[in-house]
Image (cartoon, rainbow, N blue to C red; front, side, top):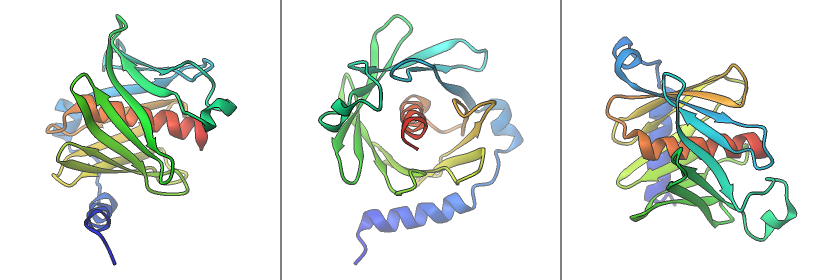
Length: 192
């Protein structure tokens, strides 16, 4: 028996399968960010705007390697901070199976991220009343996500796997989705 969540994912998959490239208007006016992973112990990163300026930084708290045995007991929180160090959002594990993570800011829980595939290439993201499906086909450098409200996000990997160039549809609230994509990027880099 299918629950409503499974039906939503199935419907989103059909939308994702037909995810065409962005229109010229979106390329020109859409929100553009870059997620980069750095060569540090915890694979911290940064989120850059179109001009290459750091908008936010990402880190884990406590700082430790993703391969540390201590992660079996409690995985460190993935934290997005302003360049001045003030915290914007925190992503932490709330369930081990299926892997589920909560996105929290100063106002409380604003969303969840759930791994939907054993290949670690399909995630569902819930941000308030909007549900996203984010899929990274194997052996592709272009991929993206689609929401049940019609929002779209496109990602192009490169010039290395540690950099994802993200283009948001005009109607997408970038802040929460950028946090989710930066988290998915680090999870994919560290564990895939």
